[in-house]
Length: 421
Image 1: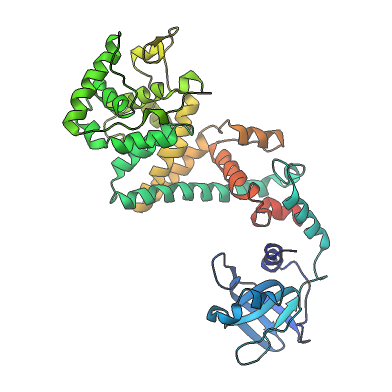
Image 2: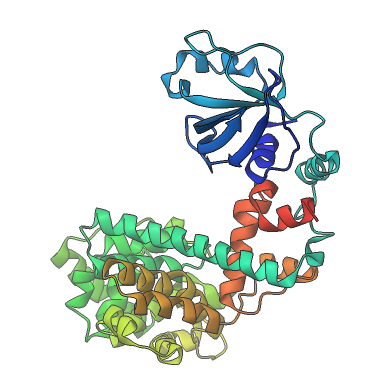
């Protein structure tokens, strides 16, 4: 037995107890709100003992002696406990005035099958604990849960954006530039791409917005990817431009060893992504405002349809020639930029300006974008759960990371449906 399961029983009232340990009539009017922080387990509960109704906090333990083991008797936060919920009563617990705290015991008062199934979930080593039964749950119940999960994930992303905005004194343009850069790293090079953007403020790039070569020179130079000797004109020109501009702005490049090339598709090499990023900056002045003002998703997508500079048509790295092919930013990559940068920023801006229209637009865009194609989404599909759009694929990613991987079956709507089906 564990306290998480007892909390679950109490929150969902999945037990039958009508007497306290003192023999008084007992009923629950409202189990209260779960407290995940320090202090009592449930706030603002309402119960009836005998002829008296009580409102206050509830504490839950496996053994009553845990009260002393957790030193609640020394903590004033527990002085107003109206009920002690236990699996086993092995020691009386009294208030400071020597009154026994009303107590109920749940042992043998709930369906043992629920605990056995929960215990099997917790012990499972499968990709997800409920993979053999998840597809049997009601489709509409799953959709309702996906809405909640998507909202959770979007909130997490917007909180991360808001944190950066607070640090930067609400400089939306700079934070947007850094986050866009981070997501151009597409997981593998996300951290180093963000470091690149941090080392090269947007205000500097903005001064050279009409000159693509200078933008690329600044980005490649700050990335530490420019050498000193080249036989080709393009990298030689970039090097000379960076030499001048880095001295002008007193710039110091980041460590080039941080960039990862190994085990990557050449189209995802940082050399290619940096050029695509530079092209977007070059031709999309005021990108943030354009994004906020645009209503149709296809017009936002058009802002990100770009390709690397001509040199990269026949190269993946400086000085190493390959067969000729334009290096375009693909549709799936654009979708990831929309999901991870554009939509969270639009949502945050909507919250800050109290614009329901912007927040609703963010949700509608998620519904329009195709579902992501990654290992999580493919694994769910193999188990009978298929995402229809990006809103649902984001929900499944949230489900896997925040519930399945952490064995939070008791906090999961699907877990609830299976345990109580």
